[in-house]
Image (cartoon, rainbow, N blue to C red; front, side):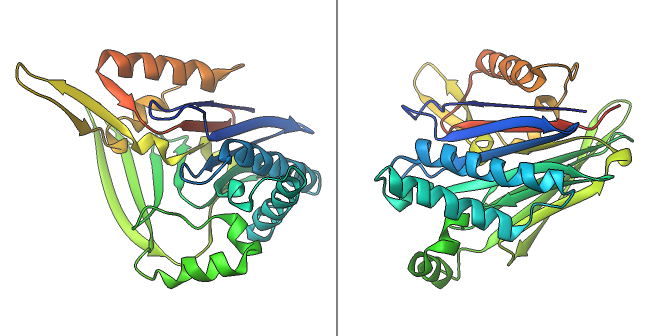
Length: 278
């Protein structure tokens, strides 16, 4: 098994508000990433506080062979808020989503608190991609659990429903066909689990991967067209090898190819992968 992660600032951001870490404890890999809100102050710092707080808790759970569930995500946010207070930062700095992967016994657990993407590659070649988003564009953050008034305000916007779109990629001899379906979720935390023996890798991505656009120039105009995630996620996750810093290598190659295609991403990107063994 191996775990690795990478993050990079978006074209529209002066500082990267995404952060990710990966590691291994007692031969068990894990990945954690956070995506800070671009309209809240100091979320580059807050995302790091959240990830490091979650890492401290997750490492303890790995030692106990227990999953990392909603209570643990919210406790990580509470700890991050306390650290932010010591630094005299506004509590809004912890406005960040939190995604994790860890292995417990014979199973893996991938979680998403807020918005983002979870991808599961099975050993039989099927890739399942789950895109979690909110109808009005602002997610529920784990820090809201410690901020009653902000949580009540969030819940009062009943039209801001959480939508999960599931893409299934089937690899054939000539092409990759996709199937997609969308449903609404009322859960704060989304958890995806499976048997290690049935899957090759698990990936988590920040929602910045939805921000890719293609620059189109003509003799008289210049415009951009969105590049949909389902059109490139299979290529993004096509790892040539899974040793060392394999996620950074793949992301660098993908971004190099994207530039050649005149694609750009305005939002920050973060990605983490746990390779479960082949």
